[in-house]
Length: 383
Image (cartoon, rainbow, N blue to C red; front, top):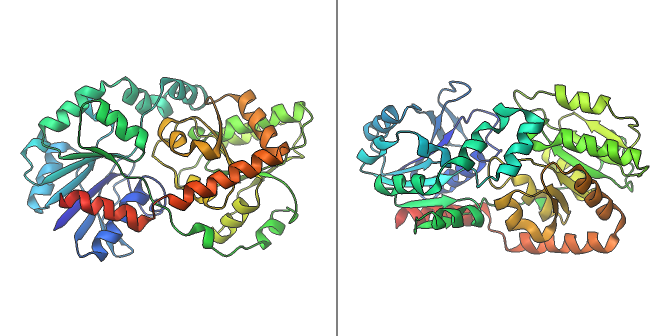
């Protein structure tokens, strides 16, 4: 069976990030099971060209729908798995109707609230928020009816919340296949990293990890650090800033430079390996993931942190936070006062920390592995 698992704008260096991680992991298991599974990437920011990653063929396909469908027909794929966010309802996707292969749609993102979108607009500008605003304003039933008429047999959401939204919009064969977990918690500790970034082995700290993009809330958190300094709260926050391709640190650095007191704020921009990252997450009192909008469900970072029994402080984001809510401290997106209060609660309340830590371990104990997730995808295309 020849399978095309399609994604958007995948290029070298993004394979471990969502939503591309799901596509890579599932194709890897499909190939191990004897399927001819290939990744097709639709270029947006760059024309990537074809390459291979861990034995998986990654090929650039035309983004225009008619050309794309001709590409699928010419290569005689038996199964097409294609990303269909809500906003695709506003486009002419009728070309998919002529494809005779099995067609499965999936939502690489989720269901976005206008509150999240407008908060992102406030902090990151209209361009950053625009695609999610369009998703939110798109009539869901219009999209679902199109996919039904075009012969899509199934639709996959990457969280229970999104899958239920698809069912509510009128597509019965909608199912949730969660992103998987790996063995992050089994990695060896490398405590030398604590020394290298000037943390004592017993020092208490909250950790932010991620890129400086407005969508990830680093500027909001920096403003919270300013608020905590004004309140004379002695809470140590470590920013482990990831330098993704195209990262822009201008707004983050401006927020950092505006801090009245930087004694409790540490910014680390050096690259760390996965063992070092695991160590920093494990020894943290909590990890702060203040996503204003979660573009791709569910960020793997959530699973990595919770697998260590480390609590997470985050903003409400429908699919992700609904699924993991028992192990999270949440508040409205962009709520600096609410975020500050949750940071103080976790910092000072040992019983709360212990309770959230155990709930995190309980959730991850039953969360599916990548192999189990991939088997669900395989069973779906065999139906």
